[in-house]
Every structure is written in C-alpha cells, then in structure tokens.
Image (cartoon, rainbow, N blue to C red):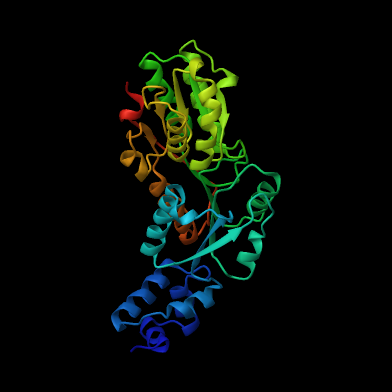
Length: 339
C-alpha cells in the first residue's frame, strides 16, 4: 500500500500539503489539489476515514435530534419513520454516520455542545415546536452559525434552515374536495397549535371555507395531539355536533382513524353518518375500512432533501447558507369521503 510520503514525492509537494488536500483542510490552489489527487489515484493511496475525521476536527456523524415522548414508539409512527428513512438514505449515500439523540419536548437543548465535543458535524431537528425554550435553543444554533436544519417546522427567523411540506395547500385541497361534493358545514380536527404544520393546516382549511362563502364555525373546530387515541376521544364531541356537521377534515390519518372508530362505537354508520378526510397518506390509510381519503405528504423526500442540503453545505467552501424548501402535497380520494 502506498504511503503519504510517496504521494508527496510524486506530486512534488510536502506531506503536510498531501494531508491538507486529502483531508479537505485549508485553502489550496486548484492546480496543487489536482496534482495531489492524481498522484494518490496513480499510487492507489487510500485515506484512512477515521484518521481523516480527526484531522479535520470532524466526527463523520450527522445528528438527528428527536423529542422523547414517554409511551410513544416514535419509530413505529409513519411520520417519523418516513422522515428518518429519507435522512438515513442520504447519509448512507454520503458515507457518513448517523447519530440519534433525544431531547425533552418544550425544554432547552444544548445543541452547541454536540458540535463543541465533535459528536456531530451537522444536525437535523425533528418534532420541533413553537414552545419558547425549544425556539431559544434553535435560534442559538443560528446565532452561532452551526450547520443544522429543522424538518417540517417553520420559524419566521430567516437564519433558520428548514425543509417543510406545503400543508396550507394540502389542507385546502382536502377541504375543497368536500365543498365540491356539496358539503358546507365542515368541521376540522387539528393537532396542537405549538406546531407550524398545525397552523398551516388550519390556514388551508379556513381559506377553502372562506372562498366557498362558508366561513369556518369555531364551534366545529376540535383539537387532538396527532394520536389515534386523541381522535377516538374527540369522537364524543363530534357525535354531539353531528346534526350540525356535513363532513370533517382531520389533520392526520391517525386521528381520522381514531375518530371513525370512536363514532362507530357510538353507533354511527361510517362514512354515511359523516364523510371524513385524513392527512399524511400513511400506510394505514389505504388499508383501513373505509379506505381514507387523505393528503399525500412527501415525508421521505423531506428527510432526504434536508440531509442532502446539510451535506452539500459541509462540502462547500462557503459553508451552509440558510435555506427554506417547501415540497408539494396532493389529495388522494378514497371511500371515507364518498357517500
């Protein structure tokens, strides 16, 4: 196996220059960089990946920080599993490692220490919210110029990079589908207001209702927490309002499934009693009875794109610049909304 000294001799440079070129450290003339790489390739010199990470002061890991929610199996939920699968694929293709970390929702998290101790080279934040202490931690990363990205959560601060889906349009399409079918008294079961995607779904719903000349009735707007259980529990309130409702839009499929199950237990024949539209197009949506009309969200693509943008920023001489990406959503019509 060739040595660094042999590469240096063939390229006509010092060993230190070979190290800087192959480790990507410091400014190097393009002609010198090309000479060194050509010599390394000719001699079959392979850089030790672990040694390279230490030389660059890098860990070789992309960190993913998730909320720790007791009794909730995050990896079995469609939302997190799809986003993580996309992230994992991008990281795998890059040859980097993936480090999963947990934080307590609503609490401050010391992201800066992850970088200071070289545990991660870049960071992806999932399940972030508008809660003040969470926001402060994320803003602090932006202030320090750390390479990170928030997935499926928007902040007004232009320094915070994010990759989201167009939930305003998605919810608008779901509501308009019911309006086009002649429904006017349409209710809405949303998730917690602490998330930007909840606000976006609510905005799309209200926009469609206002355009149809049927402004949303505040008494027909319900709140869950994106779990099937919260949808099931909301069924009692929806059952009481059933005579005032023509249809209902749910902010995710899990709540829609829980709601339908709850209404059935209370003697409602579904979807005849109430057409329902879900959101996410999870695996369960097409398997449920009745199959759910829902909104397809590209969670896998969101995760993959977020990781790719971070990895591209690490390779750039200019570093990572703040970015905001929004991916399209689309309506999938099935039997739960058709009667």
